[in-house]
Image 1 (cartoon, rainbow, N blue to C red):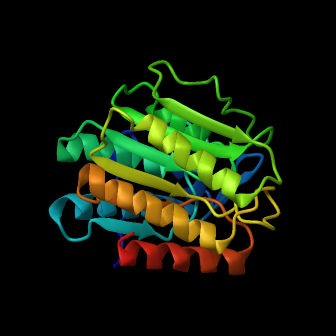
Image 2: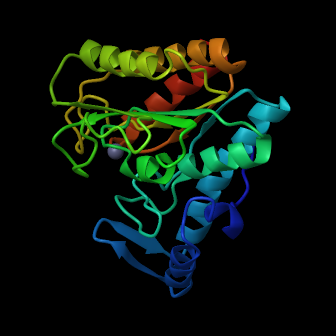
Length: 265
Ligand SMILES: [Zn+2]
């Protein structure tokens, strides 16, 4: 379905108003660099607010019964965006905003965010770690961009599970480590909504990462999360695209994810 654009009020669920206004002003002026890696064009406001709006729509659909599982095929990604700064191709933290939106709009407390992009979801962590009823699991290459995400960094409330791993391990090691952290994060705690930062730069051959996942691993990760969401929270799961820099592989991975979401685990 068509998405909608997130409003400024929705963006400020996670970002400073002054930052949101600055992005708007740069876009209105025709674009420019927001950080060394992150360039805005004249179309970036619409693209970035649509990316967030899709995630918010998907959350609404999970709660009103229209679709308990969704995949948001959006760019730009969001998981590096900080409260008052763009970073790593990310303007607004879609998944973090969706987390705060779900809690405010749908009266829930407990949200689990999982992130299998090859890079640490530093923005997501920064934007949710103050909230004790939100848990975040991020698996990422280490040491690697953006340099955060050590295993000892559990956040101020112990609600962060970082899984830093070297490049070149077997895919089974990545999948097993990720699911092990998800299970540790949910051992005595059931989320009411699951959000997935679905980054496909964790696939073998991606120029921005050294992980070794194949499409079969993406299928498995998706199905494992679907099945867990069914047991925790009636299956409510929203996945949103993050990285992935081999276009053909990225497209295939999105299709695999959609098929696994459609199959229901
Ligand atoms: Zn990435």
